[in-house]
Length: 455
Ligand code: URA
Image (cartoon, rainbow, N blue to C red; front, side):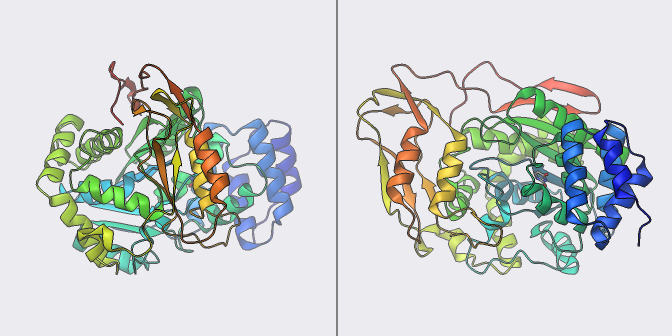
């Protein structure tokens, strides 16, 4: 049992003073073992939320949560293994495209992913919409798959950072999720445990992300990279736009279907694929299979064009027990037909000017794709497809989106919410760049391009 006086640690943080590494370790150990009750951990989390944590404290909290479980050892798998993590967004189906893509370029990728959180979807829920796909792999199965397929995406087991799992659940119900040091420690405790040698982070920024402003996203990126540096892990953070949903599908199976189309090369010039190639370039360069991220991006484009990335996705699906026939023909998956449409209102003349990612994410949860309570199951087919996006021409009555659900959501309410998420204008809008900036221990580099991105 840890020797900890939680009252004095809470008081220290409440008064804005710093805690030592030992204090934080004792608090995390005590909470994980059950010696520190929820109400004291909640008080500490709120004090940390309000007064912040120093870089040293964030690193110590990460270390304590990391040490609460297993650190997966992939050192016997040849090659530089590179991980990837997104801070969460709407329509973010980058991982199911990126992991097989980077693996097909020779860089092993081991990934532990999460389930949907609030209005944001989770990669595990998305992959489980593939019939029979399994994400509850043992550490041995995970390790074997990285060696055989060079790519794996599994759920977080109880063995990895159990303290984070427990603390995260508490943060979710004590309004302490969107704290930069707490998010950074939570993410890095899991990423340092998954066995990779380097890491690329997609730090999402905008209405549909946890970080709403560039300033917040920059601070989060800097905190994440600093924690990586403390653990000798090279980390590159790429800040990407999350004002508008990514791609034209939101929901679990709808996004996997769009991811398969991307792997087939059908969406080569979209914002989504720009982000995929941007992150792939970083990962392939960090993994030593390209001299520079630019060269890595070219390799990634080639792997989509020659079918290597799609083939690797098929192998990953098969290795995790999924039905590979839906990769060949996504149309055969049962219940995937739309149940309703959202049409443009009479004022919709000209172009789509804007689409609010947060409202679209919330509407997707209403359809059944996300959870209203922690243990609730998700509807794998629920979601939106063929979303019209900013820059698309529109006229009254045009279809703005198709709705999918196998349950019985309130379709009228969802229709109204999706319609309200749109703004229209006479002229096409100038769209914000998808990739904003990049950060590593050398500093920031702008990635913005002057021209508007295609959707
Ligand atoms: N993702 C995580 O893993 N943790 C957080 O705190 C927020 C997003």
